[in-house]
Length: 117
Ligand SMILES: [Zn+2]
Image (tube, rainbow, N blue to C red):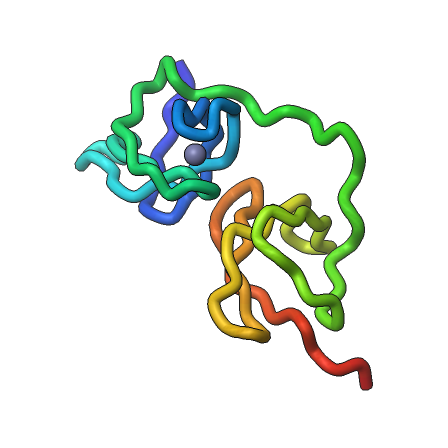
């Protein structure tokens, strides 16, 4: 059996009962053996206990999101492709020019809404 070790902040996909759909979740708690024990929905932030059986595989995107552009202003829920990190979804805007994006592996902070040079 595949041995996976997770750390807090990793990303996994599971069905969110509140959103009623499968979506990316952030790992908020792991066991001493590196197994996920709690996750938080990236959209509604509902924290739920995690069972391996509840994990789902990421869906292939129906269409490829636009490339990340730091001069654009993003909103939560928007998707993008990043040349290094792959496909990501904006989970929240932290500051007018800073946002959190959930990529396939983990949550990252990116700048946005920058003035074009
Ligand atoms: Zn949710």
